[in-house]
Length: 323
Image (cartoon, rainbow, N blue to C red):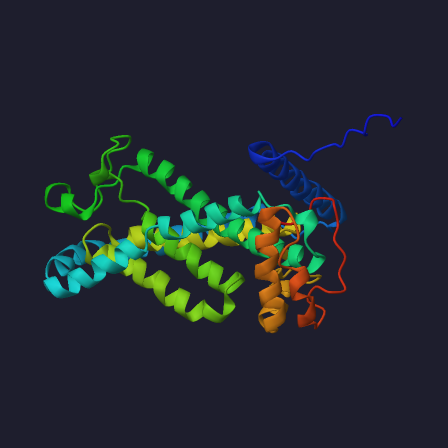
């Protein structure tokens, strides 16, 4: 007579499984950041005098632009032909932060629900880099955008439509009215962040992102929504915040690393290696499907692709440091 069959423990499914994956991935990211941070050498920091010099320089630049061009820009913007105005309306709309925030934020969140312990190390590393960059894009553009929306309220500068009544320098703090939320330009903050992203991450597109960022700022003047000084302040703030945030990420070894000379560079080695090999590109994409499904399904079928993309890599059961 045989005894009862041993009870088999079942892995959680559905929402519980997704919640466990999310918690495990967040914990792994935090643990990695603590490990890397503990190994980091103290990063070079600017002295108080250097910070003061930077802020004074930015203030003087914005002030000079304001006195030279703000009043003049109102008349010039009103004289722009409707066709040109329409083109810059399109550019201005393209400069809204939602075009970067939603894809970056949702994709990073999506990756946190992957079972990264069921895919090869290379696939985990690839999507960890992609996820870290997506998180940085979201944090840089979203963070500085939130800061600007807070700063605008106590400043309360009138926009160009109020020029005839109040002039270019009117301030009505805490009015909470769109017409008095001109300084600094939120669209231009996004443009400044994109320029910094071009220098830090998307280096092949740095010229295109530079031109696009500047066009976003210019469009806000042409459509009569901001003064040139608003745009200048926004570009400087977006650029500076993104560069500062890269240093914060580098301290945790996430998305960026700091070299011995203090230079900050993006961690893109696995991504670049994958794009140079079609086999690795396909394996990385298949691995994403397997991680989200929670089981190796397509990766084993791609073992014949070779080139080290997956065949000789073993699967691990613990959560990844990555996505």
